[in-house]
Image (cartoon, rainbow, N blue to C red; front, side):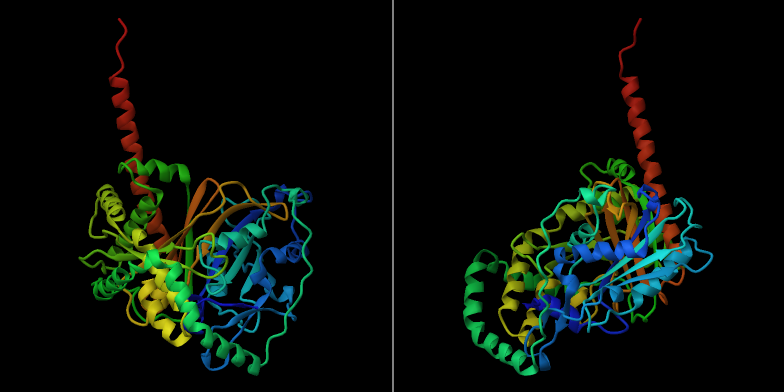
Amino acid sequence: MQQLSALDTLFLSRETERTPLHISRLQIYDPSSTPGGRVRLRDILQLFESRLHMAPVLRRRLAEVPLGLDYPYWVETADFDLEFHVRHIALPKPGDWRQLCIQVARLHARILDRSRPLWEAYVIEGLDNIAGLPRGSFALLLKLHHAAIDPAPASDIVGVIHDTSPDPSEATGAQPPRWRPETIPATSGLLARAWLNTLRQPSRLAHTLVSNAPGISGLRDALQRHRLLATRERPLTRFNGTVSAHRSFDARFYPLAAIHNIRNLAPGATINDVVVTLIAGALRRYLLTTSELPPASLIAGAPINIRTPEDADGTRVQMMTLTLYTDIADPVERLHQVHEECLASKEYAHAAGARALTDLTQAVSPRRGSLGLRAASQTMLMSEGAAPINTVISNIPGAQVPLYLCGARLLCSAGLGAVLDDMGLVHLVPSYHNGISIGFTACRDMLPDPTVYGGCIHDSFEELNTAARALGRRRSGSRRSRRPRRD
């Protein structure tokens, strides 16, 4: 058995039927690269079966300690049923992109069953009316609980089920070890473990203080930043209130080359700067259409993964806050301001302090630990009150080479995030091969028209892309004018 971290336990304690805390990846494939030009459900089941040992969490279920006296455990469940987790559906007619987004939003809205391993996969067929997709394409929606894995390491699970060649036989690996399921301890056994862990707390705390000595000095600053964030004013929007149990979803896809070109509008700008600026422009456009754009700029939260190579399991995340400059109409000026905002942010430099406080929390009791986590995390996923942000923007690095599932080439990928009270709109931005996607998940009552907001994202991209192309033409013309004339 493996015990959950304090932070992952907090993810579980904050989950409700109305606000499930899992993430999802929507991936679309072209089966024409397979020998028979088709991938069947049994092929995908066999693939998962053969690689379950590479992602142990896929066969682990929760064992919760009575009365919450200790953190829960992951247990290798003896009654694991792969066919319960891998399911097959056909997209209802008309089978277009809008229908796919509606179906995916419905599946994403359903809470995962805690009596089983916390993941599900849906094979979705019937995509033949989606423009731009080869005939016969299919999708895979993969749902993973935050307690099991956070957005950045989710690519590890994605990597497990994919190959870098259309021929799966080319993938090499050691012989899978024999799987040994575990028995969930009786209540008396779990309570005995909790008692022993309580006795060990003083020594664990001393060890943690010594091992985190370099980061302890940043604890006071981390706590002070938490107090400042809690009192920071943010404008209220339609996305900041009590959410329903229903979700809306859409995504837009862009080539990385175009994003790189847009970076030239602000010297030193990063891909993240461009993405933040693009989403800020979309929010500005959408709220203008509803006559709800506040005069003050919206604020976004950007999760930062502070996990180190020594952290084999468990979520370690910190939240950086960014001003979006939605009060600026000029997209180029907005990009400059966003770039300066990211440069000026000191949140990255303070990750050691937040990490130290997270480790300290793990060394004390669950009830006391949750108090420290709220200060360490600075993330609305762990906040009982109103978070000082309007939305979340999370970048997810992905593979930069083509990937294949049972020989079918992965064409594109989009992410769906966890929507919570006071945080009714979340953006996930995974990269893959030569492109990125901007996927957004929202409370359906707050964003009933995801196609309209998706159009705002596209218009914001085109605005920046047009400015970048114009800059390129000016630079090209300037270079030609400087060339010496031949007599």
